Length: 230
Image (cartoon, rainbow, N blue to C red; front, top):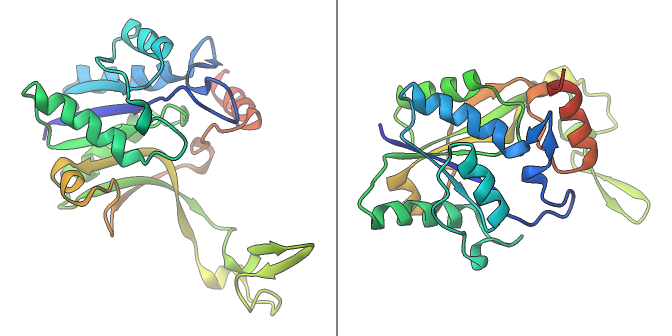
């Protein structure tokens, strides 16, 4: 199976300006993901590594560290309201226009730098041995369920579950798995036909909860630094 590894990294970020290239353990954050992707490519698991960005500085950094960045992401698919599938289809279209086709696209979020090489490799192996249109990475959550979730109306907590105050044991509700945004894999045919990255019932690869931090705030960044910069 021919894989396009796509690393999305747009300029804008409300929480941390230019967070994709903020310093993380002595290198831009995106480089951690590029280096893992390069190892996968060197070992023959993926075919092409491309960074989709609207930022000239990210283009330069990506090329310096071995990723392709042959185009700038158009502004109409680079803002806060743009759908992720749009930049994926844009990248597929670029390569098809120069005669290069892929069977699947793997999206690796640079803002999830705690994923490991083995996480990505294991996700690929699960996808390769199963007939499915997509895969997502997740972590197991044994605490959160709708017994302890509320909406806020003024200063009131509106329960999602009417049994929230009836002493129902958390154990009786079992565990849930939460999408962590680190790894997505989708077949190209499905992407083009359905205009979606995630199919109705995707495969899942379970990562450890402590490796599932998605950097969105400075608090997230400090957490990742404390775990990664040892």
